[in-house]
Amino acid sequence: MMLLRDAKTLDAYVSSGGFSSLKKALRMKQSEVIKEISVSGLVGRGGAEFPTGLKMKFVAQNLSTPKYVIANADEGEPGTFKDRVLMERNPYQILEGMIIAAYAVGARKGFFYIRHEYRKIAREIEKEIDELYSEGYLGSNILGSKFSFDIELVIGAGSYVCGEETALMESIEGKRGFPRIKPPYPAQRGLWGKPTLINNVETLANLPLIIELGSKRYTELGTHLCPGPKLFSVSGFVKNPGVYEEILGKITVRELIERAGGAEGNLKAIMIGGGAAGYIVDKSFLSMPLCYHHARERGIFLGTGDIIVLNDEVNLWKVLLQIAKFFEHESCGQCFPCRYGTKRMRELIEKILRGEGKRRDIERLDAIANALKIASLCPLGSSAALAYESAMEYHRDELMEVIS
Ligand SMILES: Cc1cc2nc3c(=O)[nH]c(=O)nc-3n(C[C@H](O)[C@H](O)[C@H](O)COP(=O)(O)O)c2cc1C
Ligand code: SF4
Image 1 (cartoon, protein in one colour):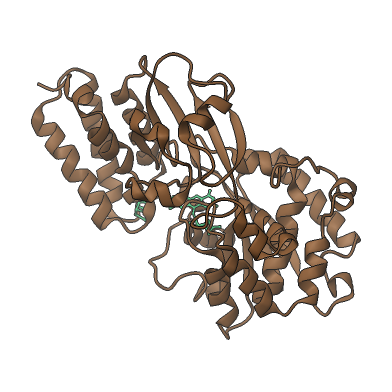
Image 2 (cartoon, rainbow, N blue to C red):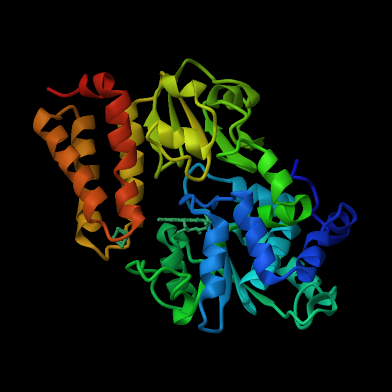
């Protein structure tokens, strides 16, 4: 295990090689660290799949100061629980990655943003941060170098959209969690208008690995298009739901489900990429190798790496209703297509579930999904259309059975 190794104490982490990557990174030039991350091919594990090295380069090249680093541990996506397990089992690897990232981009201050539902983990992370100060891994002149870095823990207030990077920054700044219009991107103008590197905690946990192995050995993991390990949250109708660490591209959807004990009942559909902002696909996806490249070839995104198994007892309209309710509740209300579209989507699905669905309602749902995709201000609105559109693409006959 490269990410999910059990290293809950600092002693256990250090004795299994922890913080040797930070020591190595501090002997390298900042540009060399960024080069290693870029060559490694690491892409963000928070859902947007953006190349991490490139993001670091943008922040490093921005001449404005001060610069910030944010670890995104908001993990609000339903069906995603990989970051929780990672923080519980191997927290220091995330913090080491954060310190390496800060050194590389020239940041002196970082924020660890965690959802308030993870209060117990937040208390642990706070203790772990304190420990790193006493052991010289944080604070002034880290490990005797000229580099100084501080981390502050921030606990969210329960809003899904505050996991979105710009809303998260508004939240840290003490404002209402409204997403900002992009560009400017966080690397240009982030926290308090300053260059900011924001990464998912799983992304950050990969940085010590890349520095330890070297980018060449890291790229040899996985496929040349998608290197590295990935955490998958597997749930729904499977015998052993949980978080599974796999090498990208080396395992298919079917094999991962088998690793989780196999489906309970007859598998009908799979939700990939998120329990709300994901795709509802069919059995033809069982043979798809789990990597970003193959997912895109099939017209979907791996997102946060969720696999939710749905069996033939599941009513897909009911699943779509839960998702629609979720988005209606979580829409921040700042822009009209999402504020009104998510509400109308929920109302129409409820009508269909009452047995009153007409073809005209499907046309309306199609139009709403389209409006959400093209006119929403932030990706929350556009992703509210994904489950409905993909379910219609892969399970149209079943969904249309109840439409008159
Ligand atoms: C509605 C919404 C919620 C999000 N929630 C999270 C989250 O909980 N954790 C996360 O890492 N990224 C989340 N993201 C993605 C972030 O905006 C951002 O892309 C990510 O933190 C970048 O890190 P990465 O490059 O390491 O993936 C969310 C995005 C949207 C649109
Ligand atoms: S798309 Fe939705 S969540 Fe995003 S800004 Fe608009 S209303 Fe808010």
